[in-house]
Length: 404
Image (cartoon, rainbow, N blue to C red; front, top):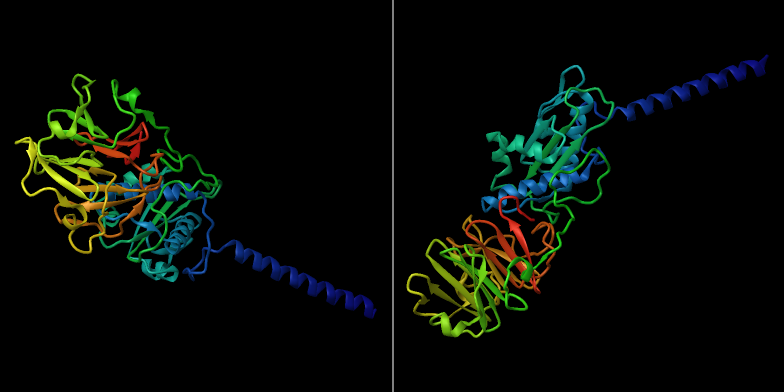
């Protein structure tokens, strides 16, 4: 009789333990209840989607001459949590709600559990980064967050779970921060874990460059040292002590000519970099540590040149390079100067290198360009740009911020 009673007690205890385990498992399976604690971790559903949103944000910022945002891991955790919370509890709001519509947490109460955040964008319904970015850019308030001068970094959360009953299926969150990080500036990470295709991402894909002689028929040189657009639909390509003129109307390359003989007042035997600035109708020619300013109207070098590059482009303490390999003017009032594997962005009106430079030339900063050093660069009118390296070139789409 005692054995039967003891067995009954043991079975009762076992059942209690099983119920407690099941209850604990149930609680763990329902993490989106109440306000976030900040220690929650939601695994990325599609990290490539998230990094592509960051890249597209930086495309929009670059168009306006703004500093790119870097990836913020803490803000990404906050964004992924909120995207998942909205999906599981079937709501769409900046504040946090449990199922049934009970508000449990204010927006920044939640975000600051994960780290210092300054703004948030949310979106639902869209299945692609590009479509979701269009939603945000077409909304003044969301667009203002994306283009904020005070923001330094960004975390993105995307959530979709097949079979989960909710109204919008795809959930997106951007959490901005004024804290700078050392993270990437965007593009596909190559670690997609499902959820669909990334549209027009660029990602880690690099385009094969084109032979200069194939794209520029009659090109007489082995390589390009410098290149510049010139008023009248003319492009000048420099190589060694010579240059050749490409007429974009006739699509013909002229015969090689001597730089010193035909560019009046230019003291250099070789041009390292060149660009045309529409604002003052001048061409800037760089060689070694010096440069000259060439007047298109008078067809000669302005008085007082040559001058020292580093001393006159940004002044004392400038982050400008002492020697320049290539120069690329942009329609937004900036000039990109390349030296070795790095480049700087120069504000022409303010006569200074923008903060955060120099940067490396890579697929994240110049999407789909295969070169890691540049021999020459050129902007034709306002589009496209060209990068030259060792007898090859890339065309670069300014608005889409990608080689093509």
